[in-house]
Image 1: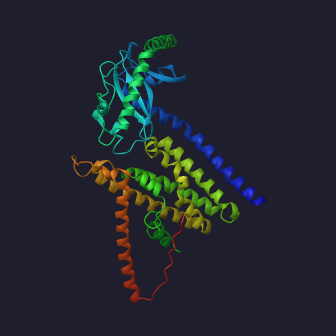
Image 2: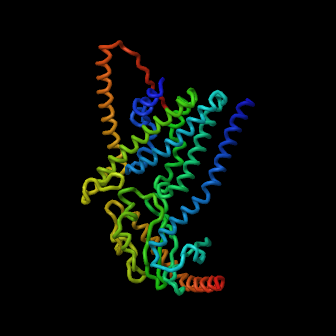
Image 3: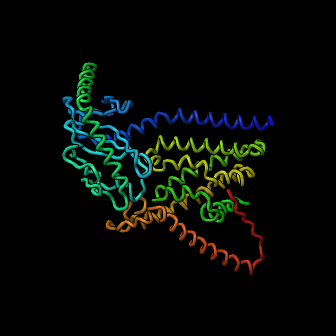
Length: 202
Length: 219
C-alpha cells in the first residue's frame, strides 16, 4: 500500500517537474509564435502602414469584455484603418475567429479567418477560396446586402456548405455595426494614443 | 527476439493500423493530406519513445496495482511536452493538428506498447519497439494522407502532381473518403501478407518447419 502511494507520488512529481521546465522553456517562444501569427494576419487585413499596429492598439468594450483594436497609420500618424477580431459562434463545427480590417469611413479593407474547425473541402472555403475571401473588400453596411445569395444577399455560398459562409457574413456584418457604434470613440482614442506616444518619444 | 525481429514485428506484422486497427481517431481525423499525416506520426513517435523508455526504466519498481495510472501519467506528460514544443516552434502545424495532439494521450496503441512490451523488456528493446511501432504508424498515416490528397486534390505534400487543372474529388477529402481509402489500403496489405506467407510456406516445405508466434495485443 505504502509502496503504491510512494510510486504514484514520485511519478507525478517528476512529471510535474518536467512540465514546469518545459513551460519555462517554451513560454517565450509560444508567445513569440502567437505574435508572429497575429502580425502576419494583421499585415493582410490592413493597408500598407508605417507604424506597428500590434503595439498601437486601443481598447473598446464589447458586451462588457475589453477587446483590442489595432490601428494602422501612415508616416505622419494619420489613421489608415482599424483591425480587430470578431467571433462567429454559429459555424458548422464550433466558433470561427475572423480578423477584420476597416477603414475610418466604415468600408472593409480586408477580412481573414484566423481560427476555425470547418469541414476540409467544404466549409474551409472561407480560407481556401481566395475570390470569396477578397469579396469582402470595399463593402460597407450601406452598399451591400449582408447575407449569402441563398438568403437574398450579395455573398456566394459554397457547394455543399451554406452554414459556414452564412456565419462568417453575419459575424463580419456585426463587426461593422460594432464599428459604426464606436467609430467616434475609436477615432478619438486612437488620436489621443498617437499624441501621447509622440510626447513620450519627444 | 532480436532487434530486427522486434522492428519487423512493430513496423509491419503487428502494425498499429494495418494489423491491430488501433489509433483510428487520429488516423481518420488528420489524414486529409500527407504532410498532416507525417507530423501527426512524428509527434506520436516522440511520445512513444519517451513513454517506452520511461516505462522500461521503472519496470519492477512500479507496483502492479497502480501501473496503469503511472503509465498514463508518463504518457500524458510526454504528450503535453510535445504539444507545448510544437506550439512554440511549429505553430502553424500545431494549429492544424489542434485537438488531435492532446488526444495522443488516449491513443490506446501507446498505452498498449507500455503495457504489452516496454514493461517487460530492456530499455534498448523498448526503444527499438517504439521506433518500429511509431514509424509503422507514421507510414500508415502518410500512406492514407497521400492517397486522399492525391485523389482528392491531385497534390502530394502540397505540390500539384496531376496537373494544375485536376478537378477536386471531394469525397476523398471528406470523412467517408478516409474509410473507403483505408479499406482499399487494408485489402492491399492483406494481399501482400498472403503473398509473403505463401513464399514463406514454400521455403518451409524445403527446410524444417518453424513455429510461429505473433500475438496481436488489444488496447
